[in-house]
Amino acid sequence: MLPTLISSLRNIVGADHVLSGETATPYCTDWRGRYSGKALAVVLPGGTQQVSAVVALCAEHRVAIVPQGGNTSLCGGSVPLPQGQQLVLNLSRMNKIHAPDTINYTLTVEAGCTLATAREAAERVNRLFPLGLSAIAAKCEIGGNISTNAGGVGVLRYGNMRDLVLGLEVVLPDGRIWDGLRSLRKDNTGYDLKHLFIGAEGTLGIITAAVLKLFPRPQSVVSACVAVRDPAVAVQLLAHLRANCGDKISAFEIISSSCLDLVLKHIPDTTEPFVTRYEWIVLIELSDVLQAPLDAPLRNALQTFSEGILEFAVDSKNSAGSWWNLRKNISEAQKREGISIKHDVAVPISHVAEFIAQTNAALHAAYNGLRIIAFGHIGDGNIHYNLSMLDSAQNAAFIAKSQEVNSIVYDIVHGLNGSISAEHGLGQLKRNEMNQYKSALELELMRSIKHTLDPNNLMNPGKVI
Image (cartoon, rainbow, N blue to C red; front, top):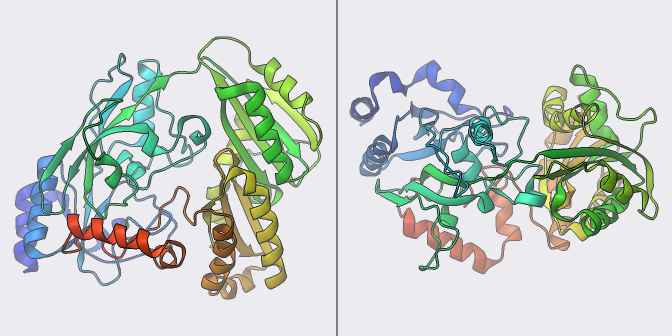
């Protein structure tokens, strides 16, 4: 069957766009280097009709498909399984951008368009596409952003990817094309089908194009770096800022001292934000479409906060870039330091400090010599909570205990009415854990939807559910 299948695939997309052997290898390993698999072939279609034909062919031959964009998944969702019986369908060639509708504030793009390119297209017409994943914006692609319901630093003000999509075009598991590329803000004509595919990680169909929401481009921006006593102060400060600055707050990020250790060690041209090293700092950004200084209201809000701020600086020009450079390079610094047990979790904002305190205590009691890297989007309750041993010789043994470590973290998250995956998805990494933390009814409903759309389980099997 394989030679016939490969020949048919070449007829559909062209011989140069069907890869196998060593040329396919880079598409079979994830960005972190944690998950690797084998593919029957890697196919790079040039348009939706080609995707449709490839999917229909695979459905006929009962060949499973792994949809792939920039392959920046952190949970192994975008690479094939080790058995080598899956086809990787990479959409990177499908990167066209249609002219923005500046009146409707929308931008229509193909799934292979990178996030950086989409943001640049919006900026050229004085608009903003606000998804904030600056560390990987040049590599990650819109189809993957939608499939994982990506978040980033701007969720506090603009929402997740689910909030930024108005319409989708999707190739279904049998090869049919659903044209849902609508640019409507209101459409109450039954089920909103696009939400089935957002966050589904390619398990229900392949997103080939999207209509994205645009926003007015900010004309005034100011940042602050604030040293706080502990995460509880940070949570209280966020509530205070929201009461005093309203929706001008566009980002509110917390960074632990251990994060700074790694960034300063591995990333060139990075510096301490203060002369004194503090255990916790918060980065805040305010922005407005009006050309009005925001320094004074931000400074006033910080000065009128009751207690718990140890030091702060407000800067709209000189230091802000270096502060945010610390934040965006945490993941890269961790990657250079070595493997760790990573958690992308969310709890209600009011429980963030409780989560950090409870989990820190439980893990330090269980594991001596533990290093905890805690940082993230405190403005929406999403904390990245990553663990490794300070002694690299002990780290391999610690990584082997991932399952028991995860249980400690996820049990606390669940007890606080949180989620074990906030913005990275489930992929292979958290697929089994979901059975423990989702209710039986939720799992039944999800499996029913999967079976209805993909009865032969050909769309990214082994991921999510």
